[in-house]
Length: 332
Image 1 (spheres, helix red, strand yellow):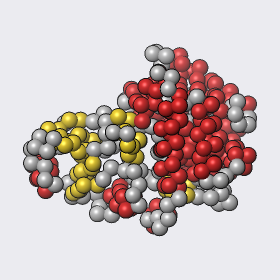
Image 2 (cartoon, one colour; image 1 turned 90 degrees about the vertical axis):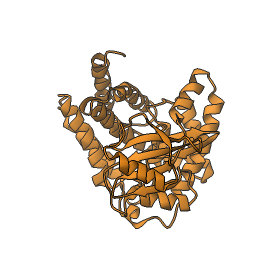
Image 3 (cartoon, rainbow, N blue to C red; image 1 turned 120 degrees about the vertical axis):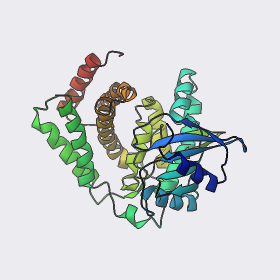
Image 4 (cartoon, rainbow, N blue to C red; image 1 turned 180 degrees about the vertical axis):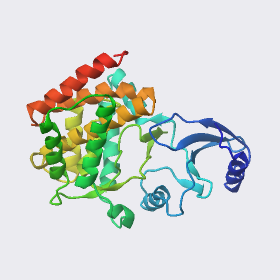
């Protein structure tokens, strides 16, 4: 679908020196934004066009793009935008997701290649976590107790939508206490991407670009790292997760014994949040491809029980959800 105001689009691209082009839709993701690949027929070059609602000049995505590019972060270049028309032109970061590459490596049993690729990505993530002079609007928003509780409340609302009743009040209490621990100001807060997984990393010519960073905020470094390593889109083996977790720690001289528990507890919180997102996108937004990630998410949550201590009733809660959705999702 081309935007309703086709003339606006043509004028916008012409301002960015693209006079003759072909346009094709990019696979739909969880975002409300719509993305197209623009191919300049004269230059034989491709771009990515983001179509969103009209936005203010100080839009988070635009300001963060400028900041991250100035910091030489690995993101697609911002080539032009029109806030009145809701159009953003970006460098084409590639049409191969990290997810695609990792699933191929898994199929071919190229585990060393998986580890080496992830180490390169972790090096970049470490750089993001070290960033200074952070934009004020990012510095002012945190993964505080309110935000973490919102993510878990969103998950429970999705269960309600599925008519799954939670009778054990201890379950809600556990998550309240978990979020209080994860948001304690005694922990170090860093610049976090907020959604750092294999569908937000693009590969092209042995390079990678990170996308979907507009909701960046201050948080625990473990939020991003657990998003990357405990990723339902690829389901890394725990042996690989452990190697990569230790690699991250070694790069900044941290001891595993001091950070192991908080990393895995953050993974539990993050996976529960992701489960709520998949339920919402799959069932309520009627995007069926996201339903296929519900069981992998629950499998990762059940695996966590063997790694980090949390109450038996939480394990039983996830186990019952797994059994329920295994019956409900016909293709599993």
